[in-house]
Length: 218
Ligand SMILES: N[C@@H](CCC(=O)N[C@@H](CS)C(=O)NCC(=O)O)C(=O)O
Image 1 (cartoon, helix red, strand yellow):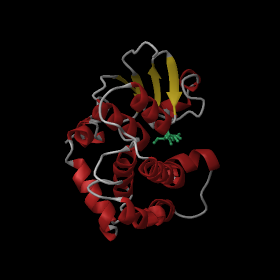
Image 2 (tube, protein in one colour):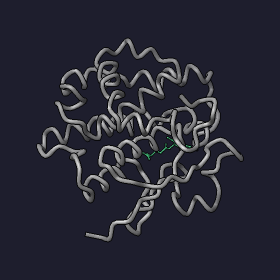
Image 3 (tube, helix red, strand yellow):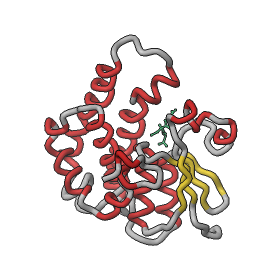
Image 4 (cartoon, protein in one colour):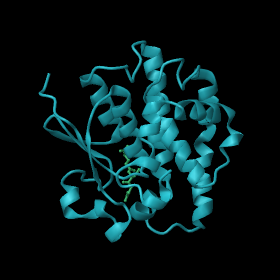
């Protein structure tokens, strides 16, 4: 196994993808350093040439770990899971593992990329009001509800916390920021409430990160 070093997370307090990685570190009990990359200040610090060397996509997160720099939060989470002790973030059972990946991919590829902040920069002007775009792109794929109804126990897949839970909670946070009524989705609401009680989700929450502005701290 490669020499293990303390990872460095380049992230932003309110970025849901950065939060995913913070939750994974917390669940595995991995200590790490954070370097804030402000997605708004100076026109977006992720867009600098210097940051581009860390993540050519010019997005957060990027993680320096064990001599490599990784981007893509799911790849980071799976690397940490495979190289660090602590609770498994992907179940041993292949069917459950596939369900965890199915839910994680649905959120990471089917919902989160269509958020307006990314979309604006990458695609350009949106032809209808932003709040409508937000509602459509963030709430519609919450047909996730029907999948979770089938797979969930106490958590998204059965009774063990997994990468699917790590993806769910930050996405619900985003949806709530954009005023989606999560109460319409009882399974999502229940899972989110249960997960937010867990220490790893609390310590990694956007409201208490080193770069959280004072007015948003709770
Ligand atoms: N698939 C990537 C998505 C990363 C991503 O969308 N990051 C957002 C924040 S959550 C970002 O950096 N947005 C700023 C931008 O695109 O300018 C991952 O999972 O890491």
